[in-house]
Image (spheres, rainbow, N blue to C red):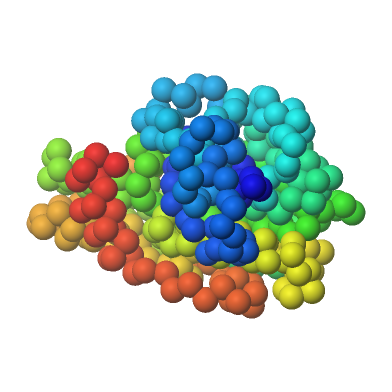
Length: 364
């Protein structure tokens, strides 16, 4: 009896990580590219667990994330094992069989954090250690980059490798993500398949712990239900009116479906490397809808989902973000489409409506 498919997910108590873990635990292994088998062990962690087909997850995150509701979501599952992030690699090195893939979402994602050492430790050095582990052990590696790497957007949003070094990020978070992206391109030894996912403005369930860094859909919902109004920033540019700054908003469910497609591709390539060709084994991939819409439009969709009259108030932009604010983002999806990912992203209206009515109204 062989051990069931095993994945490592970092940042597992975070917004995207929680959604990744939930999806993997509910997936039939065959849908992720694994061969059909009757002799599939239910749990990698509990020998007495009853037999049932599925995938296992080794989850890791910062020690202070244990108190979150997302951390308690999977406790008790025989297919879920938590390991503190400081112990992860030593834990993995001792496993009798290596993981099938590492999905690395763990990072400091604050766009207002000003301590460079935090980003150096969590976003660069930790990512490098995981890359090296996956390279050494022939394990596919999918990690979170960010659209923050593109800076103010004046140079476009190309995820092509040859364009990587032309960008200048507007904050330390974006710089740390760009620094790691550039570092990967200089490595002669790589994982068998790797993808750096440049997320645009993601919103969706399980983001409440992010506080001020949570999406405007989350904050707009709370403001609208408490005060009847949604507050948006005034403009810092003569090019845009208040609330008319444009962003590429993408719903979390779409991001997760694309991630599953990439896992499936990675597992397939590991079995048959010549079946899917990738330059230097990997790519950067923009993850957005490829559509830029305004904050005003987003706010109106929140009101619509709540069946409330629209009421928007514009407030001054805080001094600490004026110079690092992206007034326009829009994902170029040509690379994603070129490798056969055909997933159709839901509209902003559909995503906001689902998030508000099926999750926020239920406390998620």
